[in-house]
Amino acid sequence: MKYIREHLSAKVFLSNILVIAIGVIVLLIATELAVPATFQRHMSQMGMSTGQGMGMGNGNGQGMNSFFQNYRASVTESLAIAATASVIAALLVSLFISRRIVAPVQTLNTASQHIADGQYNKRVEITGEDELAQLATSFNQMASQLEQVENKRRQLIGDVTHELRTPLTSIKGYMEGLVDGVLPATPETYDQIHNEASRLARLVDDLQELSRVEANAFSLDIHPTDLSSLVGTILKRLSPQATVKRITLRSNLPANLQHVLADEDRITQVLTNLVANALQYTPEDGSVTISAIQKDDEVIVSVKDSGIGIPPEHLKNLFTRFYRVDKSRSRNAGGGSGIGLTIARHLVEAHGGRIWVESEGEGKGSTFSFSLKAKK
Ligand code: ADP
Image 1 (tube, rainbow, N blue to C red):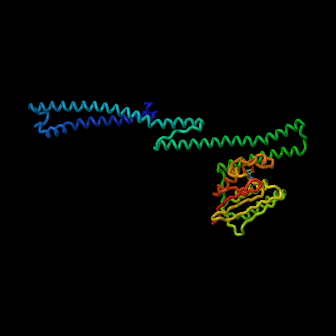
Image 2: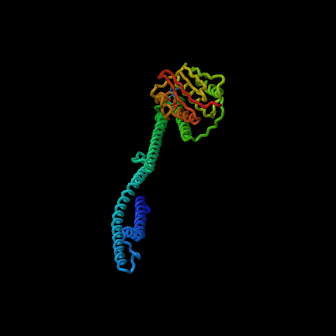
């Protein structure tokens, strides 16, 4: 009983046996009930009427009665032989079918156990198009999603470890140098240590922000926003930085620019990031321009710089976290860890917009643009 409860194949097999048994019983009962009447009808068609009917007391009646008994016995016997043969055949077929039905379920069961054990590369073979095949397809999709998430998680831990190690190693090196007396205890040395510690703190902040936007754990307060005043604020905030590098920082906005539907703080964050990058990757005496144009029901905001540009092969990866065109370059230039643009992408996409970059190549400047819905 326990075996039947625990095994689907046993249940399917048992239900088939039940069907067969009922079929056989109905067949036997129906035959038993039908034989006298059909016998009578056939006899009368042959002109061999039993007269008073079967089982009557005269000689003719007795002969007919025994004839009928023999006929009935032969029918029952043939029926029993035929039923036994067909029951055996049905049992074999049922055994085969129940195994066939249950086999894919068992395969799925084994594969799901592998997944539960963390072996995300397991897939099941899909045969046919029935519900089990659909289940197998969904299972494979689920497994590849899990595999991707797991790969991303591993990669993230690897990247974070790598990013944390660099400033930590640096701080440790400075401290050892100071302790051993190899490095002079000057304000410059302490400044370097402070810079590394600041970078570490910035990285941790960025990571926190990244995890928040990647998990969609932030809310947007979207309302009609005046881009002109938003751009004005950013220009004011970043002008000192531009002045230090003698970079011309300006805006080029049409006078009647439509309001956009945006969370002001979040779009300020995106635009600040793009302008700060432009200032960082533009050499002295260059220029950075913030512009906006209306296109259908969208407003496209662009930040164009005359900076170092981006080689074409890097363009499509720039919005992927931790991606940097030249790792040593951005680090030496006081750059970040390649998280800023990923955060910007998430924020813009949360507004229902797109973000992209264009560059003619190295040394030819870059233009970062994003779209926002215009207020109707
Ligand atoms: P980071 O903090 O390293 O600047 P971002 O995600 O903001 O991280 O940018 C990723 C990479 O894209 C940068 O490391 C840099 O290589 C490249 N990049 C971003 N903005 C510009 C730009 N205006 N000009 C050239 N390269 C840029």
